[in-house]
Length: 367
Image (cartoon, rainbow, N blue to C red; front, side):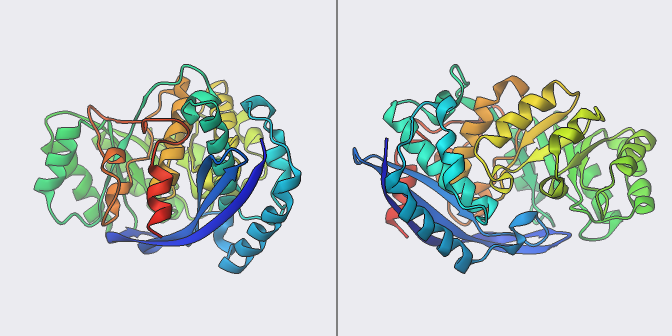
């Protein structure tokens, strides 16, 4: 298979309301939609979202550098013959320039893999791993601050989310505790509660907050400390009884597999577009499972193309059975209803081959 055409367009998508984090509010998403076409006229799509402040190595990418990478790829692609079998797709990793941002690399690889899966007329998840399930369990992301508790209660209860993720650390500690308490007491069932502090606290503050939070049966807390320190995280876990998760820090760690070998029971929040290769999340997930760690695939707030691809990646790692953070399209003012429909706590994979019929074309044609 050869890729005979590579194109990219910029997108801009506004959130319904700013997402408040300790790194600051996020009001919109921007980035690239990438379209790759093979000699048979089949098109595949990928997404390279721009960097968000405080979230990993993508901090240094720019429109100009991404344009340069796209030009290099466009020139190099006609000379490359891709094998369409998953386990022989090594050419894909070699062709992307070393200076490409992780998001651009991931978006490009997704687009080419989408073409390959479509050529085999199977979903991307099955192309990666046969017998992948057709749905992925997802958590609910609680908006902060909450404007309408009645609506929140209705959404969580109707969809029966297995877990709820709450952003903490951006405001007053008392307000964070009150939010957790409210959530735990208002529902007619008990979903897991995940906290995400986005590196908000020093050790003493984190210890004080989590000592209080532990009363509400917290599944884990993401990035409680301002600076990643493995030993301090393990100490915090021991003192509070709450599992520790790393997100922003993960992309800054030189050797993730060495970290896993410590068997410290960390929860790894895997954002595929920040890890750089479409292969990487599955490799890390499989290694986490044999090293007493957990791996949770989570979006970096992408549009439908990025979400669809990551749903397929999560399904291909089905053996972990983790509740993923992929129900984020509801944060936008508009979104594909099929990828926002949660029933009994899961989102069904898009129908059709590759990342899903019509998903890429619809966005591409409207840019």
